Image (tube, rainbow, N blue to C red; front, side, top):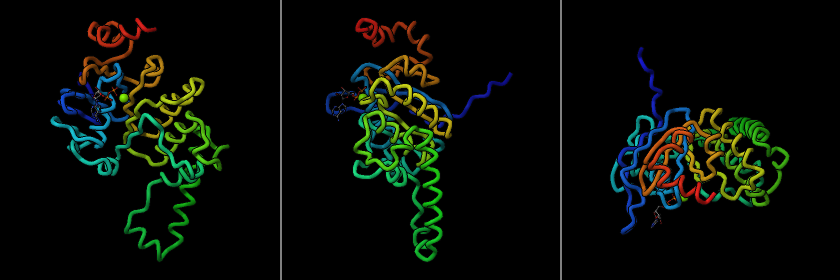
Length: 262
Ligand code: ADP
Ligand code: MG
């Protein structure tokens, strides 16, 4: 029988990055299939955030290759990555605090191209119909992410968890092909963790491939298809949580610590 392998949307090969004497990422390999929800776990300082910075173009790797779809992208700046359809979030949610929730959504909707803008000056109706479509789409997504009743609230007044949900809704309206989520539960009240879980699955249903970093292991297991463990800058194992719990290197590097501390 022929095995059908789903094509990878993201492939990281042998990527390394040092800061002065600190080797933050070392010979890192990660592949994420198109349509998947993949996760990275690992102790503090393992290099997870740096890996996301390197993939998303916020930092340049010293060596190694990053393939996004058919493009070789290592060292490309973040705005180019974003144009190719790769978005990312940060450990702290970023929204426009002085804009309403609805206006945050409209600001995240894909912009008309420059060329279209010029033509739109002569055909105002085009802009108006795009705005109408964006508004309808924003209302649908705010409803899906449980924020519709807050649409006229200033984003700065939302709770940590609500800001995360808005971040997810903004990603959904921006429609990147892939998003990297750095600790989506950071700053979120535990009672909202299930909502963030549903939001991750909702984004994925919108057709967005996801790579996320999180510390809450039961949550990571529920959120993702496949988990990669990083320690000391490199990937040491990947699989389901149950497989990883039985992996000697993972126990030594990470889960032992969690068990010991838990
Ligand atoms: P994680 O997200 O897994 O906690 P990080 O990627 O933030 O890990 O950090 C990996 C290592 O690289 C840590 O030792 C950290 O102190 C170091 N590091 C990260 N960013 C920088 C930087 N800009 N300058 C110096 N050292 C850094
Ligand atoms: Mg981090």
